[in-house]
Every structure is written in C-alpha cells, then in structure tokens.
Image 1 (cartoon, rainbow, N blue to C red):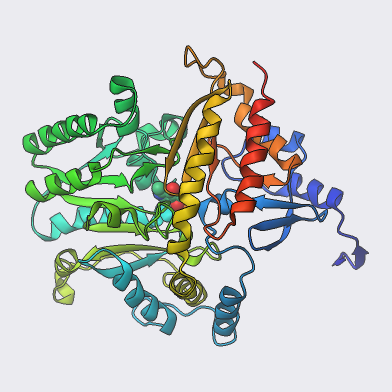
Image 2: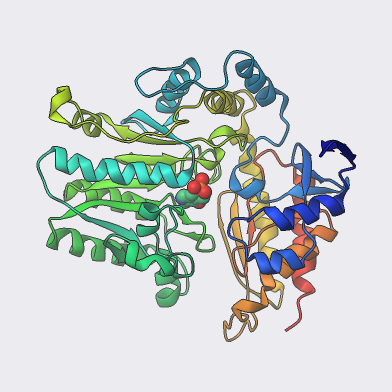
Length: 457
Ligand SMILES: *Cc1c(COP(=O)(O)O)cnc(C)c1O
C-alpha cells in the first residue's frame, strides 16, 4: 500500500507495470518494444535469487549486469552499510576526507598489482575510464609534451560518456556520436582477428597484433596511452584475448614510453578467476579502472588506480595549476566505500577465489555441451565469464537478422525455468555471481541449453 493523493492505492503488478511504462525511460532499451512486452519488476533478492513483485524467483545469472559477487542481501554487506548509514551517508571529499574512503583506498592499493599506489574515486565504470584518459592526457601536458592520440581496440567498450565512447569501438553503440568524438587509432579486436585468420586464439595472432602495435608506436610520437579491457572484450560479445597479449602490450608501452590504461571494470573482483586479470598476465599498468564488482553489486562506485609516477606529475605549487580539475558530488561516497571494503573483506574471509576455481572448471565442462546444439556457432570463456553465440546457419556461420532478437527470445524462455539473463545481441552471456553453487549453475545451464534447443530457423 502507498498513500497517493490522499487515497490508499494497492500496489499491484499491473499498476506498477503501467507506471513503469508511463514514466521510466530504461537504459539500452527500445522503449517501443519494451512497452509492448511484459516485464520483470524485481522486489527483493536473497543469495543468487531475485524475486519479482509476483513472488516468482529467478537465478540472477548475469549478476545484475555483471556486478553482484557474493549474492544479494548478504548479511555482512548489509551490516557494513547500515553501520555506516547510522554514522553518516555522505560527506564531500573535495578537500576533506572520510573514514571508509581512506580505508578502502589503502585496501585497494594492497590488493592491486604492485606499483598502483593512488586511488581516484568516481561512481561508474565510464567515469573511471574518463578519469584515466583525462589524467593520462594531462600527465603529458604537465610534463610539457603535447600528445593527443589514444590507441584502442576495435570492439572495445569502456562506457557511455563521450570520452569513454571515443575510446570505444562498437559501431552499433558508438557510431551515432562519431562527430562528437576525439581521435583514436584502432587496432583490430584480437579475438576477431585471430578467428578470421587462424580459426581461433593462438600465440601467433597475438604476436602479429603486437607487431602492428609496435609499428604504430614506433612511427608516432603523439600517443597519450594505449587503452584496453582486461583480458576480454565483454560488451562486444565476450571476446577473450590470446594469452600473453596484455603482457606484450605492457612491454611495448614501456619500451616506447606510452601510458597503459587497463579497464578492469568488468573483469575486476574475481570475474576471470584471479582478483584482477592483470594478475594472470603479471602486468602492472599505469592506470587500472575498477567498477561493477567493487561494491559486490551494492552501490555505484568506481575507482581509477594509478602510479606514483603519474601522481607526482600533478604535484606543484597551487599557482602552477598542475592539479587535476575533476571531481563529482559523490566522489568517495561514505556508504559505497564502506560496502566496498566489506566486499573485499568477504573475498578474504570466505576464500571466494579459491572456491571459484572448481566452478570455472565445471563451467568449461558444461559449456562444451553447447557445441552440439544446431544454433550455436561459438562458445567463449574467460574464467567465470562466458558467451554463447547463436547463429542461424552453423555451417555457413550465418547470423540471425539483427531485428529478430533471437538472444532476447532465448532469455525470455529461460525465465520460464527460473533463470534471469540478458544477452548481448545474439550472444548469450553467463556472468553468474561468484558464490553460485554447482547445483544452481546446473539450473542456469540446463535452462539455457533447453531454450537454445527450442530455437527454430
Ligand atoms: C560496464 C563497463 C564499463 C562501464 O561501466 P558503467 O558502470 O556501466 O559506466 C566500462 N568498461 C567495461 C569493460 C565495462 O564492462
């Protein structure tokens, strides 16, 4: 019940749905289509389950857009949040500080690759990237060098603000804004490049790409930074890098003295099997962008980690104007930092990463079954992130027409079996909370297999 215009109104699903369609413009959503469909309205969560307002439960198999880690409604995270809430919800960090933001910065530096010693907060992944690119750009300015070009990958996704879009390489999302964007040089998407030439990932294609990168770095002196995602191009449809590729990029950026930005917004906090993908490649970048899983999926928080070298280039007397003129109202928000700290402590206390290893192996084994399905063209995995690509014709590798929304059809069928999914076009994404059990994984995978097998040409 709510009080509305002095009248008690019973909140029914029908009423909520009507208001949802009337007032709420949803992200990445064609509202005409959305308004024609029946939509899920979630009310509460418990562990890996979400409950809608009709009381039906679904496994959250995309971790609420790739951010939930330890499950919903976790008592430890709730406690951290309510304890902080009873002290203060928000205090500005522009020139002052707060307890959880300090403790979290220290903790992040402790768990990050060695050499990343400074933390700049923001609220969303796109902002974390935006901050990295502005810092990188100003770094060279502060050193008296004029550099303006970024080197990125085609198929990249770094968020939806204009700077992050400039570094992006997904035409479907980014093409419209081309005239508003700044220049960036794009190398091919490693996975697509390898697949086209060699039929799959191999060290040779990684070497070829590194050779290409070296060609560009050698010939131009105006590169600010190389920017790429941590190990897998998520939004492009779960396209992993060849092993050693990131390591190779790091070596080249060091050799040619160009900064390296690694966007671990999707891959950070255990998603690839280690705390950060950089750990697997033994890489310490100049900037590491974090978001999504940083609060365990509780609150919007992001962080850009950088080095002593970058930090020092911004030091000077006040009048020298070397400092970073950037900040947001909620930068370093007390509640978000408190829950992020509890999230990291949970990793340690519950040995989340150790327990994850057998789930990753189990996922690989079960993913192999999808190759048998007539409408599955490719299956890709990095750690606990996976993508299953639907195709119209397997032999010819022909896709379904975009407007048919086959991915969504499959996702909607999965709801009948209590599984909540959101695809990327015709790629079915599996990004389950790290705490999911093998049994719950079976429910997800069986539902998805069934729904895909129901697809008709
Ligand atoms: C989701 C994502 C972003 C953007 O994060 P938001 O919080 O949605 O702004 C940036 N980079 C990568 C790799 C992502 O997956």
